[in-house]
Image (cartoon, rainbow, N blue to C red; front, side, top):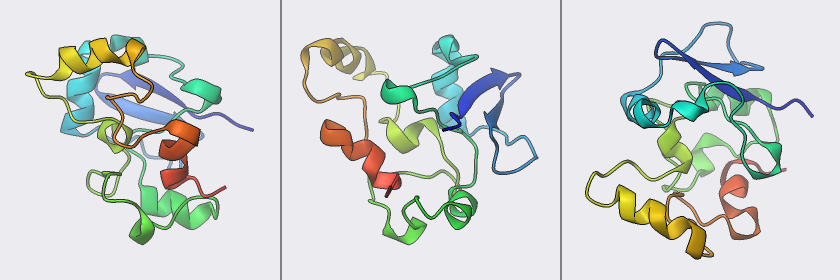
Length: 131
């Protein structure tokens, strides 16, 4: 299996393998995340070795990959920004008033409060990945 990874360079996000050869500009929400989370440079992998392509067009990806849920069938909790994958596709949007407290709960909580969908039994993954 080829793992995608996220690399950030001068406010551009590139995915390998990319759906498109053009380097997409990242959205405002993702840029805000990356302003503090500089560790996303280089390999950015989640549990199980999954990586995600911020800035890629989800509809285009789904049209080429039958293992992805059709865009019209995505849960409202899965937010695409301009049809593209964003940090807030999987994570809750940054809120200065609650971010630090939610982040502190991550270690003690069975459900990650920073995710847009509960990932128990890979629920977040299955929201987009049908197979």
